[in-house]
Length: 72
Image (cartoon, rainbow, N blue to C red):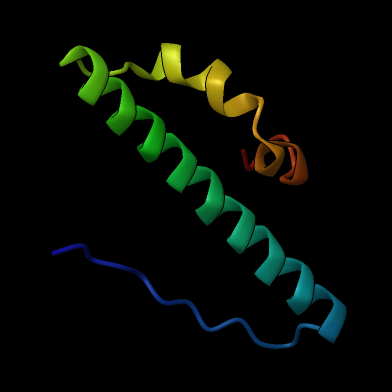
């Protein structure tokens, strides 16, 4: 079971809220790309794909470009 943390953010304008939601969606998409890449590499080679090898692959994804540099 995964534990999650819920944060209630108040006082945001509609534009700030929309931007935050989009960034969360891009982050989720990028995480899914990383997990998918690791899984496919494992099925092909029976070896775990390390972060250092996965990073350049995920960096080419469009979701990485849509996130700000410090977030991605």
